[in-house]
Length: 151
Ligand SMILES: [Zn+2]
Ligand SMILES: [Zn+2]
Ligand SMILES: [Zn+2]
Image 1 (cartoon, rainbow, N blue to C red):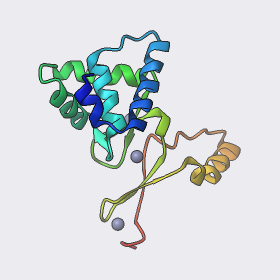
Image 2 (image 1 turned 60 degrees about the vertical axis):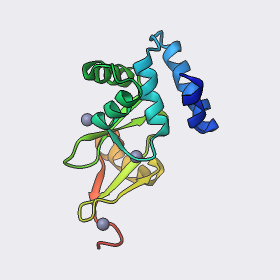
Image 3 (image 1 turned 90 degrees about the vertical axis):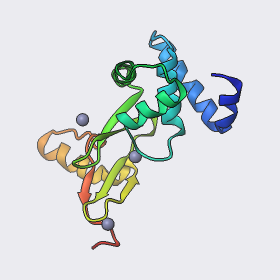
Image 4 (image 1 turned 180 degrees about the vertical axis):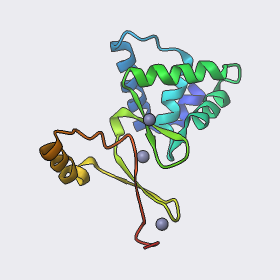
């Protein structure tokens, strides 16, 4: 990363990016510029990003990179457990860093997305575990419904 680029990122994000890049190293994965750019886009994202949003962010920083390289890198980061995808509804999956996973409530009427901690689903998780021996993975799909405004 060039110095000019580094200066645009808030200091907390720089630390966080360094920590995540370290995890690539501990998994013996090469730190390619594309992988770094993807992680940087995820660390800096203030909104939910689809694979094509992420590809656009990487290509803005590295115009020569091939789309196939970006998607392959995203796949590798996901297989390595650094990144996870979530389905918010009928649309495309969005991506999160694995260290910031949470549950999503999506309003079917206005599309608002509310992020809630896993603990809010702990009653459901323990009921399903007790009754069916089923362990839910709450992050993979959003819970759909109606928000307070739309009810
Ligand atoms: Zn709503
Ligand atoms: Zn989210
Ligand atoms: Zn999926």
